[in-house]
Length: 180
Image (cartoon, rainbow, N blue to C red):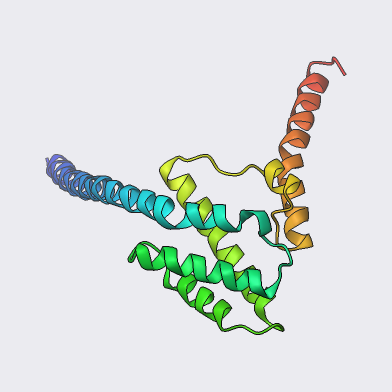
């Protein structure tokens, strides 16, 4: 009889814990759903108003060596876009563009590379978040849109690894079936 009381208490405790866990999970899912729709709307606005237009502006010269005058032009154009759309950009982009306007002929290229990296990173982030197409590895390689040789090697490996993996999987299956 004592065992049945203990098992009933254990069942009650497990029921209470289960209800508590379901309540926490329900709250979390509700919060994520509400928060996700707001984040998606903000991400779309940031993409459409700031990062896509900025990327289209600098894309021909992305990660390339440019003249100081062109860097100043890009910095002022980006700042104009940012001032027309407050609250939809990261402040670091504004600071980098202001630094670009104040740059001299010895440091402007490094600052421009920082602007390129920032714009590219945020464009890819918001493209993924809103479901817009992202630039493929092949596109980045064909248009030389990488900032260092290490990034180039990474992009090449990213493009080759899936094919190599598929070849190894097919070879493994064929070997297991004694067809190879």
